[in-house]
Length: 639
Image (tube, rainbow, N blue to C red; front, side, top):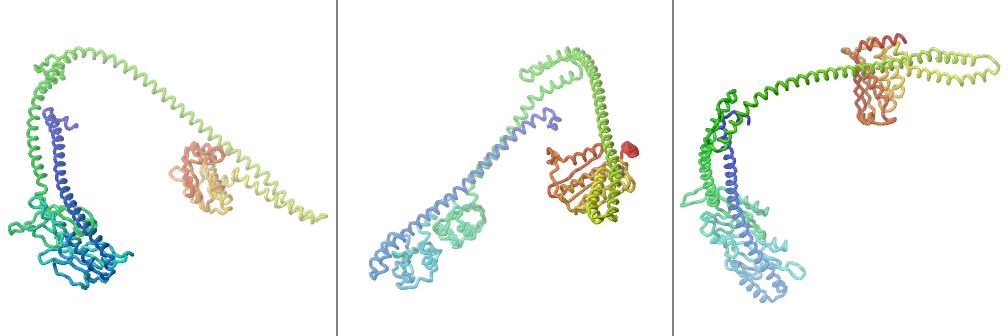
């Protein structure tokens, strides 16, 4: 669309008009082509329907003949079991006269396939002859169903003979004989329509069987006994499917062989494995459609020529006055408001020119008013700009105040955790210096008393020995309490040793294997950072021991690029992270929340990854903050 605006109106109007005309012509052409295609489809459909009607006629004739054979077989059945054959011969002769299609042969066989009675015009058979050489007779005796056989022979005059047979059954349903007759498919009562059917100069019909053999063809039509489309006919007859298609056929005209495109319509019969094929040249079948197509082309060309002439005249009637209007508008655009605009026409362009003249007069009057409004608007914009600057400074001040308060909150939380750790260190020192020594002295004293030589020494010794395990157990409990409150190894040996000691006592004692990976922690970290990392990993190990049901745990500690990272991964049962953090009460996971809060206070990051059945992994990254290091060092020294 932007490309079209680069053209002048004199070019755009023909383009738009031509485009519109092209759309209409395209639609008209498509409709015409659709009509041509429908005409072609109608021609093909007519051939299909003709073939179907012919096939239906063949089915009716064959069905009537088979029913007559079955009725005659029922009349002959009682007479085959006695010695008087005169009534049966009379029945046979009467049936032969009534059924005119059996012009070549009409006979009756007994259950041993020997000829009993026969009426024949060609190659008369003798009574007692064995007819078992005919395979179709065996098929009828085996199936017990009336049927139509394939072509049996060709008579000397080229006539194809087909046999119809029906079994003769006694009162118990046993086959005791067979009645059959030979028919000429080209007989007027069956396929004689192929001579009377008129399909133009090139159209003709044929009756073919499942082997592609031509059973009936028009008189004078030079057609081989085996059709050139036998494989196609065999497939369509087997599938009982109608079809219409184009094919190449060879024909002789005045002794010269020519190859042409034909329409071939085919419809199978339902009683016999036959079909009716209609041939006609494509040129003759589609003559009406091609005539319609030629008329469509001529009409389209005339429409295009007339439309082009109309567009040219219409464009000139619009672009010439518009060009004058454009020139006048350019003068106004350049600031020259002294030249008037006037066109004598009474159409829309004339009204437009008068409107332009009115606009020119009003425009000059409005220019002064616009200048005054611009000065007033500039003053208002200046005032609003000052107000926006004030609002921006106020917003900046409020934001800095919020940042300061957030910093104060973090500092208060950091100090709170530091005081808590100092208190734990003090309690641990008191338990170690007082309680542990007292319990050790008690153990030694009890041991000395147990070895004394006082009266009833054995009784005293026995009682004292009974108290020793209790005292030792109390001592171990105090040691564990000391370690949980503040492991001395954290201050004495550092973060790695303290975590290894805690892992051994908390995880390995219950059968969980722990593997440590340490990189870059040859020197001690700041006390505050060591404490935070120890508490985070300690909480993770505690959760593993309580809930994970894990077999292996990997603890990784790394110091790189001014940042210390720690990760704890297990192969336990895992859990749904969202459900734990959103839960209420005991299931909420306060230990995980405490770990997150510790990391946030130190401006670090913590990522928790877990899925049910896939284990859990906690990754923590903490920066080496100089201000935090100094505070932590001072607090450690003060403690």
